[in-house]
Image (cartoon, rainbow, N blue to C red; front, top):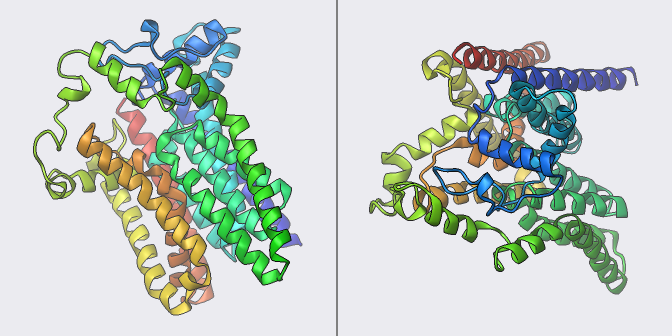
Length: 441
């Protein structure tokens, strides 16, 4: 009982410290310095100033170089930021503080993700050491800290992904009771309004629900007829909640953009019409247009290397030579975790003990990677690790499981020191990232 109280205190302390660190980082970052942050700010400013949602075709929102705006695709995180901006307008018109206000959504999103990762860890890991390793390796990753410090959809998408995974695990554990189904439906609805590269979790929620439900009911031996009725009733609850939360946006988009409910076709259309010469979608020097092979893009051009390194976090103003050793250390830890999982997990039959979760996690890792590769090859060559971020939590599950299997073979006293050393390493690398980024601004 006393140990549990101590662990809860440590978790709360970590969340408070993370929130403060992200807030400080968001205040220390130059206004508009994040990727396309000024374009995203325009959306928030429109919402705060006009009290309504923008039409993506509005010339006032159109970027003069790219010819498009961020109003065509889901903007729930910018809507929330618009509320914070509206509040900020009551006190100031200073651009610095206005940017701090809109960034608060990202700060809350990564803090919320950390909270949900602790809840997820309760289902996935047996010890608090492993749970803290799981959370710290994710939330203190330089790229994640950076996403939590400026205005973007990625951080909110990570929060909704954590929500969905928690709902999966809770629902399976509690035989998909009403609360779990409402929780999953809410997560799906929020994720649908976040970022398209997170949609793998929406897709995989369908087989995960039906397979996990059916397996649990088979174990309990309940009547098949009654079971089928309840299963589809609970599935309907999930679908209704998700549609109520997110359906309006896609109906609105279909009406505004001639049936283009995703807004992607209209984005390309306006890019062709209004972008400056050389920046139109048809004029981009993509690997496909240049006649490259997939191999050339992935390996010869350095796409794979750059994407993997920036997944850890090559920040815009950060000198690789300054941070290279720290990033190399993270890479070694991740590699050791994967090797530990493959070697130790095979002997322990960890994969076969929960095939559904492992296969679901693997597919959720493959989908964002595939989308990023496809987008870079055909649409816009961008080897950016943030496009791979939706795979973060499943990836860290495999890494943490592998590291746990390795560390548990070590004597208890040394084991504690190694866990403590890894915790301190992630704290130092996040602090160093902050220092070097803002020392160079």
